[in-house]
Length: 381
Image 1 (cartoon, rainbow, N blue to C red):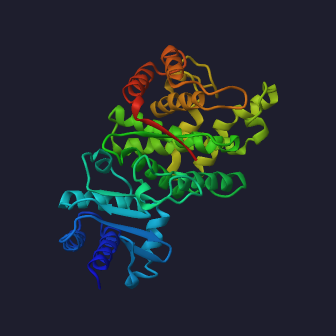
Image 2 (cartoon, rainbow, N blue to C red):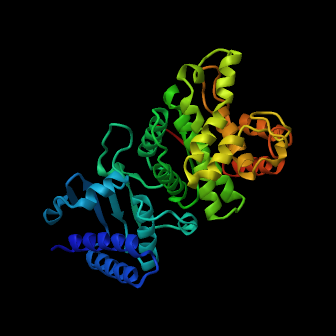
Image 3 (tube, rainbow, N blue to C red):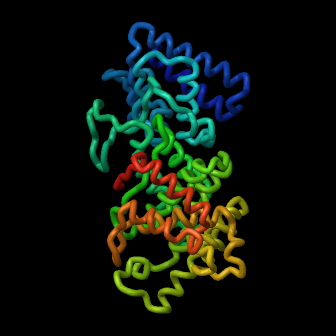
C-alpha cells in the first residue's frame, strides 16, 4: 500500500474512532497520533500533497489510487462538500487536530464546538469544493476552499426539503436543521477572521429558505459578538433557522404578492408565528425555537404580532432574532420593493431602538455590523 493510501486509511480510522469514543478517549488519541505519523511519512520527501475525492475513486496529485477504488469515505467526503484536501506545508500536531475537528464537524461525526469556532491563524491545510458555481467544474487551481467558499447549496437544498416535508404534512426533521446550523457555523469560522456568509435571493419562491439561513448566521454572529457562550449561540442559530417555519404553510401567491395585502391575506401572514410555534412544539427538543418563532415579530413597545400582555416580557432570544430578521428582510429584494442598502437597514434599526427593538440588542447589532461590514460576504445560490 502506498504512503498516500496508508495516510487516508489512518485518517478514516481516526474519524471513525472520534465518532465512537469522542475526542478525549485514549483510543482516539492513539488513532490521531497514528494518522499524523502517516501524514509525516507521506510528506517526508515533498510537503505539498493534494487529494481529490470523486465518486468511486481517489486521486493523489493527478494519479488515481487503485487500492482505494470504491473507498466509501471518498463519497462521504464529497457529499459533505470536501472534494479536495490540500497540504501546502508540513502539518504540526495542533494543525492536524484542527483539521480533524473541522472534518468531523463537516461530516456530522460530531457537532461543531466553540473551540472550533475560535481557532484562528494560518493553516497549511485547505479543503473544499472543486466547483465554483452551480453546474460548473473548475480546474484544480481554481479550487473553492472551505470557509466562505462553502457553496451552501447542499444546506439550501436540505432546508428546502425540510420545508417541503412540513408543507406536505410530514414530520419536522430536526436533525437536518441542526446539520445546516453546523455547516453555517463552520462557514462563518473557517477563515482566519469570522465572516458572515449571507445568501442573496435568486428566485422569489426561495425566500423563506434563504432568509432563514441568513437570520441563522446573523443570530449566531450577534450571539458571539455578545459573548453568550457556545451552547446559546448554537441554540440561537437553530432558532433563527426555524423562526419562519410557519410561512411554509402560507400560499406563495400571498407571500410574493406585489401589491397591498387584503385584510384576510394579512391575517394569514400574521398567523405564521403561531403556526410555526405549533409545528416546533411537536418536537420536544425544539421548545426554545418554538418560543422564538412565536415571539419574533413582537415589538418592544407592544406593537407587532401576536399581541402579548407584556411585550417587554418576550424572551431575550426572540428580541435578538427579531433584529436579525428585520435586517435581512430589508436587505432582500421583494416583489413589492427593492432591497435596501446595508447602511440604510442599519440606520433603520438604530432609529427604531427602544420602539420596535430592544435598545441594548439593537445597539450591539449596529456596532457589530459596522465593525464587521467588510466581513459580510454574499453569494447567490
